[in-house]
Image 1: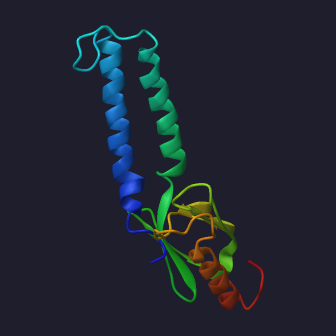
Image 2: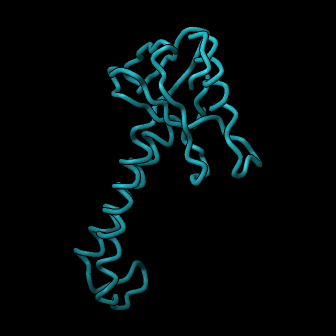
Length: 157
């Protein structure tokens, strides 16, 4: 398995609770504008914009970064990619590029394909957690590249 065991939590559970919590907070701030949570003191009028703006920005961030995550595993010939309701098989020969985002602590990995798959021309997954990995490249990136090179008999990825 190339993907982290926490992928389902990050993809499904966390967004539901985060968006639900912020929606509840936003509703409370907008519907009860004259009370702060538990203090009984009037709220600052600018506070009412913090929650709706935070909810919108957070929801966009989660929708862009967490919801698209897939579960990925690999053998000598193919990648097995799942969105938790459907699994597809993509031959390693269809892999055009493998990259990662080192700026995000989970180091999300993006796999680009030569041709369209049922999940599109690329997929993103969260690799297994590495403690103390820092800014270095996650080893799974090179592992996929080497598997593609072996499967295709080339040095191209």
